[in-house]
Length: 111
Image (cartoon, rainbow, N blue to C red; front, side, top):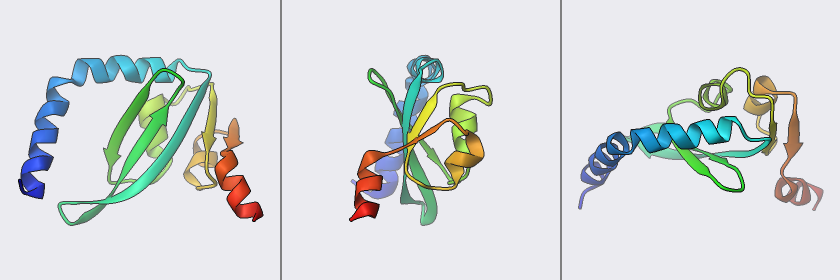
């Protein structure tokens, strides 16, 4: 199975699950606390990021070419009023001032 075949199969599955994806996205938008992280990947040889948005009950993944604050704004909505738990990446303060630093990152930095 080639990387391209796996990618295209994933895209077809994503289209089939779009309704469920939007339901989970709405649940995350309504949450009081959302943990967010992004991890770099190569997509068709180009830089992209897998964004993870997680609550106690839901996890949502979004693959985007951007690592900027536009992604949390797109996924959570401009009016998101909850708390974002995150690392120190600059995209998060640009999106929201209601932040909680991730303890794992704080502890690593303290060492």
